[in-house]
Image (tube, rainbow, N blue to C red; front, side, top):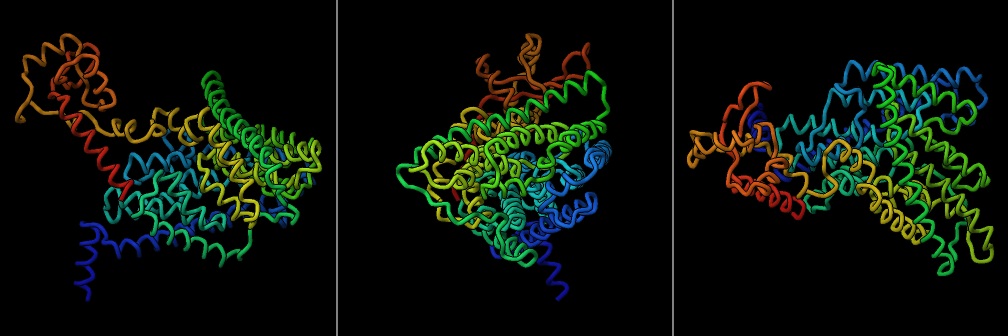
Length: 547
C-alpha cells in the first residue's frame, strides 16, 4: 500500500494530475482558499473591534464618530507605521501586492505569484483594513488565494495551463467565500484573472467556487451583505433612458476614481523622492491624512458597508451622497497612494451606490410621475461603477445581485453596467488592474499578441556559434561595429521591431561587460526563429483559450 501511494505521488508530481485527480485537487484548493478568505475576514473583524472598541463592526462609522478625536487620528497612524515596517523588511519595492499582480502571474508566470511579498501584503492589508484604511478586502483575499494555488502548483510541478486553472479555482473560491457569491466568484476568476472562458477551466472553477460558498454559509449563514427596501419597482420603457444616462455618468465617475488613484501614486512618489522620505514612513503619513479626514467624516473608515447600506436604502439626502462620494475617492486615493494595502472593489461599490443615489434623487425629483424608487438607481450605480473599475461587467452584475438578493431589477443594472464599462474602457486600458500593469510596462490589455513577445528572451531563441546554421562570425562583427545588435537579456519585444527597421535576416546577440568594453558576441538571433517562437506561443495560447 505504501509503495503504491509513493508511486502515485511520484507520477502526480512528475507527469501532472489526470483529469479526475485535477478535480479533487481543484476542490481541495477551493476549500483551502475558502477557509483563508473566511479567516481573513474574521481577523479583520477581530482586530477592528479590538482597536476601535466597537461591539459591532458593521456600524463602525457611526461608532467612530463617538470616539475622542485623537483616537480617530492616531489609530490609522499606528496602522501605517506597522504597514511601513512590514513592507520595508519583506518586500523589495515597498509595494503591496494586488489583483493586478495575480493577473500578471496568470498571464506571464504560469499561474504563480510571489509568496514572501504576498504574505507581507496580506498582513499589511489586514492591518490597514482594521485600523481605518479606506479600501476593500477582495484584493488581499484574491492574492492570498493565488499564493495557495502557487504553492500547490509548485508542489506538483504542473505546467502553465494547469497552474492557471488552479489559480482560477483558488480565486473563485476566495471571492465566493468572501462575499457569499458563487456565480460571481466563478465568473470573476474567468473574466478578470484568467481573461478567457475556456471550457476545460469552467467546471473545476465552478466546483471550487461552490466549495467557497459552502464555507461562507456554514460560517456566517445564508445571508446577503445588503438588505434593500421592497419598493424598487422599475417603470419600464419610460425610465430606461435614465439608466442609460446613469451608466454614462458612472463610467465617468469610475474613470475619475481610477485617475485619482494614479495621480495620488505619482504625487506620493514625487514627494517621497524630493523629501528623501524613507519607504517605511510613507504609509504612516497616509495614515495621518486619513485620521485627520476621519475626524470630521468617519464614513471613510474601512470598507464602507454601513454607508453603502444607507445609500441603498435611501437614508441619505442629496448633499450627503455627493459629499461622501467625493470624500471616499479622496480617502481611497490616500490609502492606496500611501501604499497601505487593500482592494478597490468595496470602495467602488460604495462610490457607485452614492453616485446612483444622488442621480436617483435628482431624476425622481424632476420626473416623479415616471420614475421609480431612487434606491433602484443606487443599486444600478453600485454595479456600474464597480464594473467599470474592475473591467468586469458580467461578474460585477452578478455579484451585485448576489450581494443584495434582488434579481427583479436586472434590466436596469445591466443597462447601466454596459454603458459604464463601454465608456470607461475607452478612457483607460480596459480596467484599473490592466492600467496599473500598463504603467509598469506590462502590456496585457492588448491581448496575447502584445505581451507574449516580452516572455521570450533573446538568449533562449538565439543560435550559438557552435549550433547548426549559425550566423557568420565576421558578418556579426561587422554588424556590431555598426551598432546593430541586441543583448542577451533583451526580449523579442525589443528584437522584432529592430528586424523590421533594419531588414536584416539575423541580429548579433552580445553581452556588455562595461561601458568602455567591447560587446562580447554570444550568438545570433534569426528573424525566422523569432517568428516561429512567437507563432508557437500564439498557437498554444489560442488552444488553451478555446479548449
